[in-house]
Structures are given as C-alpha cells and as structure tokens.
Length: 434
Image 1: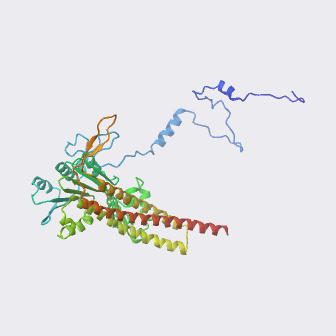
Image 2: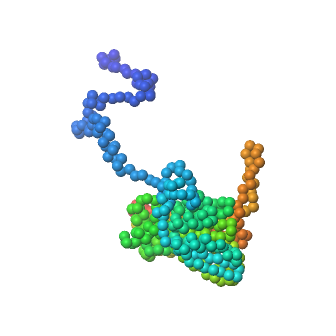
Image 3: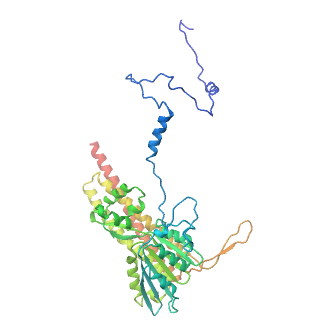
C-alpha cells in the first residue's frame, strides 16, 4: 500500500499459464455461463450454435455445393491406381472398358506406294477388317494408313494388326496428352496438339455443339469452367473477324515394317490433301524415297505450316490494338490485351513442344544402346527396330526452324502486349494526377 491506495499484483508469466493448461487438450469454456458480450451500441453479439445439431445441419447444407473433379478419360472409367494402358487384344471385362461406346464413322485412307507405283483406297469401319485380312502386296515398299475419327472398332483392329503398345493406345484415346515421342520395340508413337487453322467463332448458342467437338484454344486449355470459356471465346481478338482457332490431338505411329499410322479427331483432310499431292507426283521426295519416317516428317511439317497463318492472324489483331492504344488509350483495352496474351500463351504451348519432339526423333538411334548397370552388375542393351532415316532427320531440322520462327514471333507479340498495358496504366495515372 502506497499513499493510501490498494494495489493488487498478478502473475501473468508463461510458466504459470502452462502450469494450468494441458497442451494436448483444448481449453473448455462454458459459453452459456459467460455474460453475452456487448457492442458499443449496447446490443449483444449473436451467440454461437447452442447445440451440436445446429452446427452439423449448417455443415451438411454447405457440403451440397462441393464438386467432384475427375480427369477426362475416354475408353475406360478412371480410378486411382488402376492398371495402366488399354490392350486392344484383351476382353472388355478385363480392364472395365467403356470403349465400346466410343464409336464414330471414320474415313480411312490407305496409300500403298513404291518408286514406280501408287495405289489409293478409301475405307470405312465396315470395310477395314476385310482389307487387313489380305496380305500386303510384294511391290509395296511403304504404306500409310490415315484415319479421320476415333472409333474403338477401328483402333482395336489396327492395334491388334500392328501390335500397338497398350500405353500408346490409351494415350491415343485420351485426347489431352502432351506432345511427345515414345519408342517401343517395333514401333514408335508420337502425339501432337496442333492448331488446325480457323473455324467460325463462338457468336451464338447454335455453334456451341460444333465448338465443343472441335475445341477452341480456350476450350482445350480452359478447364471445366464453361462460363469462363464462353467469355474468353466471346472476347477473343479474332472474334471480331468471326474467326477462332481449333485444336485437336493427332497420333502418329511409325512401325518397323515401314508403315505409318495416323489418327485425327476431325481434320485429317487438312493434312492429307497436300501430302497426297506430293505422293501423286513421281518427282517428289516422298515418291522417290519410299520411307515411312518421311511420311511422319511430312505430317509434322504440315501441322507446323498450318500454325503459320494463325500466328499471322494474331499479329494482325495485335497491330490493330496497338493503333487503338497509341491514338486513344482506354482502360477497356486492357481486357482485350489480357485475352489476347492468354490465347497467344496457349497457342505457344502447342507449338513449343514440337521442337523437343523433333529433336527427340532426330536423336533416335536404332542401334542398341548400353545402359549402365547398378552395383557392379553389367549394363543392359536397349534397342528399337524403328529407324528414322538420315533424310528424314535432315528435313525434320527444317520443321524445327519453322517452330522457332513462330515461337519468336509470339514472344515479340507478348512483349508488345505487356508494353501496351503498361502504357495504358501510365497514361491514366498521369491523367488522374492532374
């Protein structure tokens, strides 16, 4: 006591708190025994749920808004940890296939050719089995089978006829794969996600079904949010020209018996037409050198060539935006620039991996390669009977150059769009300070 004033001391040290608290158990407070806290205005705060039942009901109500996300798979029901691959030789019950529901009327082109002769056949799902039963003619040096459409009956027939690996069959049926090349003992599989030119842009609900089948850039990369996809398609830089860019997966097999198999979802004619024109001309390289790896090179080259006008269209669109920003910068231009850069990034993500694919094909060696052993054990020899010819390797280098030109152009356009966005904000920032 000092100067007649009573003082009380309390120990707030951490050691005292720990002495009365078990760190492994929560502190229990009787909320009903506490006086209700009061706001400055004098009204009590709403109490927490007085019973567990009330809290449980609220959680059940909120859980009804949850979504279940599963990868989009075709040919089988997806479950974690399932057996990888789809073997066309197995029965459907073995791996729970729903592939029997994957049916489409396919247009199949078979080209048999040599230095002196060429034979073209148009087949469909019903005429293919009879054709495969016939032996391959002796004069045929190279065969190209081009399939427009994905149907399980066609995939099963060709998969069994050529002994395609189960992992490659699964990748072919699920059209969301990365661009890559996989080498097996007697065939190689490479897949692409090309931009196959222009389609009518999304301007009305009547075009939704067609766009869903062809898949625009935004639809291919946009995920499950349909509202976002429709917004991005509507505000696309090419929408004002009533244009859009379609994307689909292309699967190509190169087998050891000098045969090329190619599977398109919808646009085989875009690739097929120029290659057929070359095959029908005896003076072209494709005819003078009956090499299946050159057919693979021709397919990849045509895919990359189709991307060139797409890059030119984006260059034109960004040029128009640049004039608008320089003459009358408006904050609304940032939305158009964002959508444009988003599409260019997605477009580049389809083109850039082709460079790595081409390098992989050029570096492939059919001779046995010794892999190092472990713990002093001798290494193993790994080999593939598939050969990428020296001529195909040379011309694949030209495809790689085209890919680099497109990606460099897209990088320049992306930097120009970023600079325009900075210019818009700087201009409006100065205007606001005046």
